[in-house]
Image 1 (cartoon, rainbow, N blue to C red):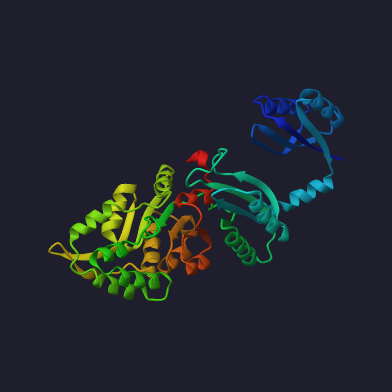
Image 2: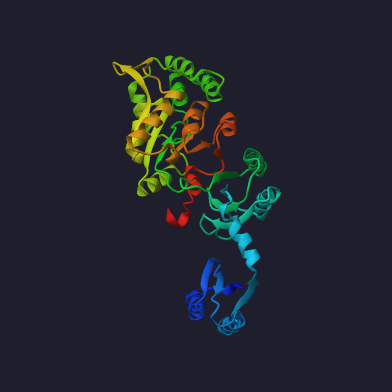
Length: 402
């Protein structure tokens, strides 16, 4: 009969604790079956599951050595594990694993209670919980604070769509974002991110800004809203809106480009992605003049957008074909991925409007960012609470690595 022990040590952390424990275990020639360690506010929690060889000293002798080595400064517990219990634990290894990510401006116990309650309802076991956001100072929260907790859960889901729906309903009720992803090999190995531009990379709709200058603001805004809600064909809406810009001076474009409001977190996100070797692209139903400006400012690799026709220094009111609509965005995303030899499962696409849905649907990770209700309901992932750099949390990249 095999002797299996679960050894747990808890208390104030120190650099020598783990080394001392493993040194003792080495003296007893144990086989390490599992090990885990975490530190919260300088308090250590360390667990080791070990098997003692048949010819080794007894587990009771090991327990006494451990108690003498660490008590009273640390709490030591040695729990015998039966072979049946161990076999049951090993049997759970093949069960599906999921990553659930909570994103908010702050984390409360109420949020955690509600989310873990959903896990319980579906019979999911929590394998690990990690805080990806930075340490929170006492007192009032800083402006644009970020908070993220990642759960690793395991178990069989009879109805994954229902589980996802319940998490999204909870996110809406709590006014937070909750992401569900399968924990597969692609999650941490994305290589290309494609962004919509207007109301995604920039916190405005350029055509509305231009229309305001041209004196057609209310008319163009109404058409824009219809198109983004999916109530009007994108191409038709674009042609109608651009026609209202006829006669606008080209100098207006340059001035507007210089004062484009970059979305919260966009610069941090893109600089981090570039440092990690990601390729980036703008695929926009907006205008190439502004996409190319952002390309230079942010260091974007690819830009595809609609080209305004300009003659004699004036906007003619026409768009040069072909129009970059929803279908064209998806086509361009496929082309870029093929050119870079990147599997679509390694692609992230981000957008807010109905014309972004085709590219969101073909990417391995499609994210509706501060999106219209139709888009939030249709996309698998959604971020509305934080800035664009919240995407890094969905990739498992914590603040310490940014």
